[in-house]
Image 1 (tube, rainbow, N blue to C red):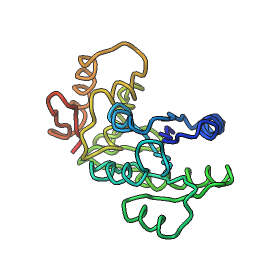
Image 2 (cartoon, one colour):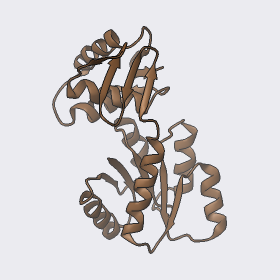
Image 3 (cartoon, rainbow, N blue to C red):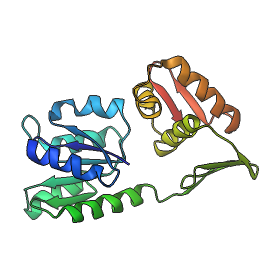
Image 4 (tube, rainbow, N blue to C red):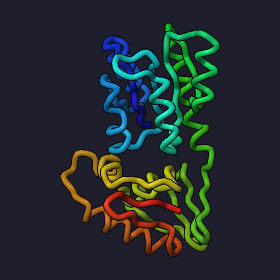
Amino acid sequence: MRVLLIEDDVILGESLTEYLQTFEISTDWLRNEREYEEQLIANSYDLIILDLMLRYLTGEDILKKIRSKGIETPILILTAKNNITDKEKCFSLGADDYLTKPFELRELISRIKALSKRRHVENIIQIQDVKVDMESGVLYKDGKEISLSKRTWDLLYLLITHRGQIVTSDMILNYVWGDNPVGDEIIRTYIKQLRKILPIDSITTHKCRGYKLN
């Protein structure tokens, strides 16, 4: 699981990053909230943890902007604001959960797990004659299991969890290949492999931007 933490408190940011790692939750900690758009374009996250009282921008404005762009990643508000009015505003803007400081670390983990399950509630994805078992990582075509390499599966998983949205080339490179020095040509090669398996026109190319699973 991969989380984006937007928090300007150095002590809390360091503590949370270290603690979440013990639960195998990879955390990208963003101290300068002004860089959040660039971070979301370049990476794929299962959850965003967002503070409201930041140095340059308000968490409410960031929340509103994220949702206005059609990004459906679950957002957990983590803040010292405990007024019911603040909670109502955040939920109206599209927040999925709201946890006030100070908080128990175990409660944070419980809420993260609950949001993760909510997002991945569909374990079986049907694309015409192709069935994808998201939990076991197996793909079937006409009832027969199709073997996929790890990178092909990672690419398919990324497209499915963002279906209906354009997944940028930078996001694909970061998620599938990480720090390995590869370019757009390798993405096209793997997209071509998936197109041989999936129904015609399942994946559309958006020039100079990325790909979308319809």
